[in-house]
Image (cartoon, rainbow, N blue to C red; front, side, top):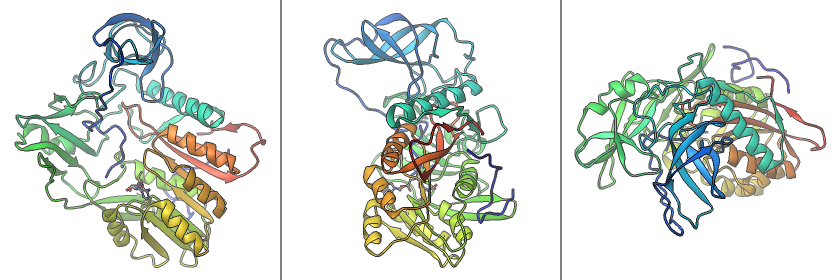
Amino acid sequence: MAERERPGRPGGQRAGGRRGGQGRPGGRATRERQVKGEPLVGQEAEVIVGNVAHGGFCVARLDGRVVFVRHTLPGERVRIRVTEGGTGDRFLRADAVEVLEPSEHRVTPPCRWAGPGRCGGCDWQHVALDHQRELKAQVIAEQLDRLAGIELEGLRVLPLTEDETGLDWRTRVEFAVDASGRPGLRRHRSHEIEPVDDCLIATRPVIGSGVLATTWEGCEGIDVINASGLEEAVQIPIHRDGTTGSDPGVLETVGFEDWAHAFEVSARGFWQVHPAAATTFLGDVVEMLNPQEGEHALDLYCGVGLFAAGLADAVGESGHVLAVEADAAAVDHALDNLEEHPHVEVRQGRVDHVLAQAARGGLRADVVVLDPPRSGAGRQVVEQLAQLGPRAIAYVACDPSALARDLAVAEELGYLLTDLVAYDAFPMTQHVECIALLEPGDPEDGTRDAGDR
Ligand SMILES: C[S@@+](CC[C@H](N)C(=O)[O-])C[C@H]1O[C@@H](n2cnc3c(N)ncnc32)[C@H](O)[C@@H]1O
């Protein structure tokens, strides 16, 4: 794969994440499973830990069962305590509660609320940052190999900024509030709340808003949003009756040396949570697709129009951009954000519905951006795209597993993975963002090399 300089300015001239579900600290992740057989919760055992798996835990074996262990690392000898499952279950969940032989990559967690049974927001506070990225690369490679039969060589997960602490990056946090009104963050797979005085991955303006020093009576949560275009973080209480405080909307700015764009977005709407993510992803997508004057582009799952804005400048007014988004509030913002581009059309609706309708009207697509939610685009959308025959598709993915499933379908239909870049957009968590380039080709053409980044 060709080496590319970064960042690239939309237009081809060089210059200079409702939010994504990527492990929101305090997000409601509770999925209580029915235990089969006699419960094993609380049982302790010593195990040698195996590989990391999708989901951020490592895999071990106990009495013939698979155990998904948190708070550990591959190769460690640990004492585990079972947190979910029973004698009739095929797999159990457990925490490593004592480390008997530590990995060389283990560090003391910077956060004092991280650890077994405590805050569920971060998965890997106990792992050196470089190694977190190696683990993410292993998970991506394993998912692509297992689910799509794609062998990647030399994939590296890149930091989004030069800051090497992995802290102070999260611009949007949903804190949970207990019955007494005290804010905190949810424990892993639980409704229980870990009271905290700080969250080290949150940006300082999030914490500086005073959210954790306030008693939030009558609330079940409080959203804090530190938008790039506003000096102070915005707080939106979520009341126990399910209503929320009014959402004033926020301004996010994206820019390269000679290209900048401001986007209005609902405060609780989708926007990438890492401050460097939107600009980096836009630069990469435009560079990968290299849209030409007069081409027709699609921005599918467009949110408030981030990629459509870049595509619009690149294809110029002799070209056309169709942006599709299901969420009505995001569409309203996209219409405002893109109003200066008469050749951009924003349609509200599900991508599969809009594509079916547009295809009947003779839709043309030369290049496509696909940025679906965690569940992925799915077979139908991938088939619809293959039928349109674009020369390139840039797939922005927050879940390597969903990406791999969609890539398997794309490859079946003659669209091959020709480039992949992965970013550590969520340090300390197991989450990772991939941008994949798909182009028409012959699957017999050899292995892919992602090692040039
Ligand atoms: C990961 S976000 C991407 C947003 C945007 N591309 C950005 O970077 O800001 C996914 C978006 O897809 C929208 N969405 C989810 N399912 C959809 C569907 N079936 N059809 C259209 N939009 C959908 C969500 O409302 C959300 O705005």
